[in-house]
Each structure stands twice: as C-alpha cells, then as structure tokens.
Length: 195
Image (cartoon, rainbow, N blue to C red):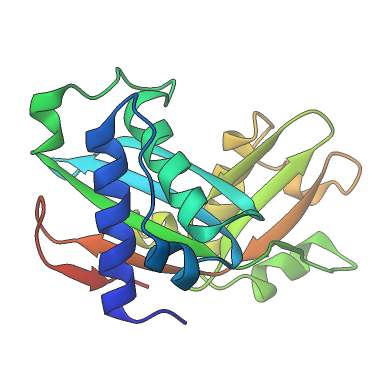
C-alpha cells in the first residue's frame, strides 16, 4: 500500500511527463528509489469530468516510476480514442494514477461462479480471448453503478467479444486484479485516494 503522499508524488511525476511532451522527462533519483518495484499502472486523464485519455500496463513489466512516465505520455498523446492534448488543455485536466496488483485468472468450474467471485469496487477485470483482450479498472464499475454481470459483459465488449463470451471457457479467460487509485480533485489540486 502506498501513502497519500506517495500517490501525490506519482501524480506529480505523471503531470511532469505530460508537460514535457515529446521530450524525455527524467525521474529524480529519489523517485527511482521510492518507486522501483515492478508494478502494473494506468494513468487516466479527465477534462471536465469526462475521460480524455487512459493508457497503462496491466502486467508488472516496468519499475513503477517508468510505468507512470510512459503511461502518462501515452494517455495524453497516443490514446487512439482522442486527439492529443494541446498545451492549453494540460492546465484543465485532472490526473488519476491506478497502481495494479498482478492479474490472476479467476478459477471457476462453472462460469456462473464468476458472479460470486468478482466484487464490484474491489476487482478490476481482464478478459483475454484468443486474439484480443479487454481491461476495465475497478473504479469503472463503481462510476457506472454496474453489477457484476454488467461488468463482465462490458469487459467482454471491450475485448471485442460478444457480451456473454465470459460464459464460454473456449472463447476467453477472465482475470481479476486490484488497484490503489490516487486522483486529483481539481486540475493541479489536492490528491485523494479513490480506491
């Protein structure tokens, strides 16, 4: 578990990375030491309470500080769903950093058991099909007031699969993970822990 102060440092690192734009920002030596553990991470950018970019790494492939730098730049400038941020917008966005546990396959004998094993507000989901995968962070189900069935269906849809594909072990596997989420309450504002 990270403290709120550490969460604020990670958000500052993400914001500095976005401000640096195409330049390659350097994390301080202190950040490299403090956030050197390999962890999954997502950076979400919102503007006027609307999604403006979200990119990350579900697997613990990078030291956390590197993951934050890369995910922040990608969310700001390379999310294919949005135009790249311009300089003016950088002052208008709020940043959210989600630190992820390693994904684990949810072991079930019958697909209906997923409904009892997944907890909205605790779990994020990954559905991996044969040729595609989709991920939804834990806070997404909370923000949309989804139940477990809707959460599973929406994650399948995100993976490019039929909404009920989670019921067929031959089509996909379902993984869960947990995350600790830090977010700015306003642009450059106070950082809170959401989850």
